[in-house]
Image (tube, rainbow, N blue to C red; front, top):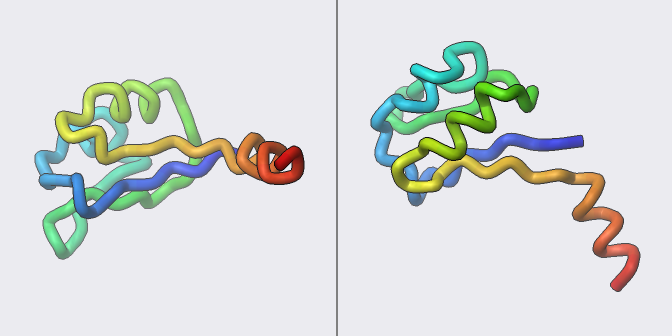
Length: 71
């Protein structure tokens, strides 16, 4: 399963992600982006690719688990 994360240390709260995907991202009370729906879509990928600070990460949990099992 893929998981969407926003690195709050990198986020500047510009709102570009919320503009690309208002169903997935919103600007929280701390004025930084937060994930409100954890579903990876083309728009989420586009938002991640266009984030000016690269704060949006899409992590593939299955791949991470498989890698850990191989180590």
